[in-house]
Length: 178
Image (cartoon, rainbow, N blue to C red; front, side, top):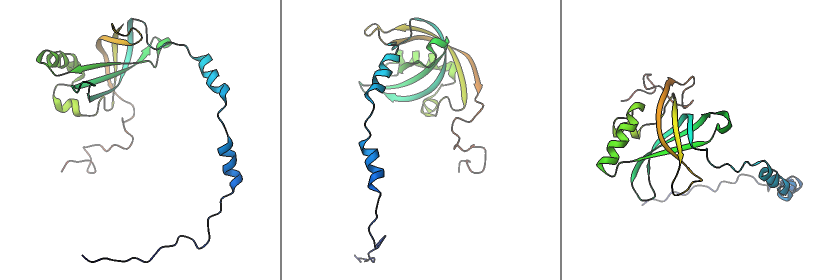
């Protein structure tokens, strides 16, 4: 084995001098304890939406593993209407560990054009704006958390902007498969 020795590289012959006053002001700045109290005062205490019917937009769909090690597909919705609850997120998990669970998942995901395992592995909703009617309840074991009982697609339209501004269209020469 041949060892190559490189000359020692010196970035500067003189030490770097920083203005310590600039850093001292940053280091000495402590968080204002009243900011945390103001956040507490403005908090609503609402951690989930009440049971009912809502409109929501699908923000993501992803293949995940549950805490018990089961493969699952997780759909996440952001409530858009009514405005009072806009921004709350509700998730629905579909597992595949039994034939019945897989059949239920396939039937529920079919309206979203998620029909194969390859579809589940792809980026979702990938440039689509999908609005859904959500029927929401509370979880039996934890009433402070929501349970998405059912959803149905209201509209499915192309997004006005691409999902990722750095993505490359597969139809172009740069993004073509080889």
